[in-house]
Image (cartoon, rainbow, N blue to C red; front, side, top):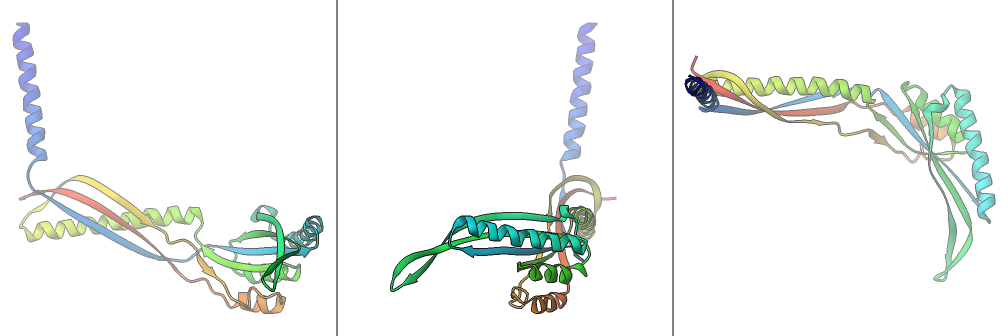
Length: 239
């Protein structure tokens, strides 16, 4: 009796495996879908630099620290929160001059960079004005997507790419006088965000506050393009 039960179970298992293998066999259609979204940046980053020169490393550092304090104070008075002001890349190094092919140390240079982030693009020119007036120089201005917006547009782009892939697969199937069956696989869900648009202008980097502010005021953020691609594979059926 037990032998018959075991045999019955084995037969049932083989039938299930056979049905599964049959369903996996047969023609399939593959397609790749694409999507490109044109979106507006929602965040700006202004990169300022503070640089001071002196005969000794200590005096260069002290001069640098004074300018840095003035710049940060000016930005805070402008309404920029301290958490949105980041200081990076602090460095002190010797300065040399070359005369008749000979190198001679003439002092030290202390440098540091500030990154000021804002969601209000109208603040960009004011940040430039405040920073340059306090003794900083402007390196670059970036317009970019916040992480929240990247996640939002990634979802939209992948959804659109998936629909494009399905439409292409359906059209291919129709050309073969067939219809799409079940979805077999989805892969290569790639999302491409090119990164921030970087602006640089000689006038923006000028030591003149008026020139820098006017140049920054003329900068308008351009649209960004984000893209995605999705690969799909469907079973084909006759009806």
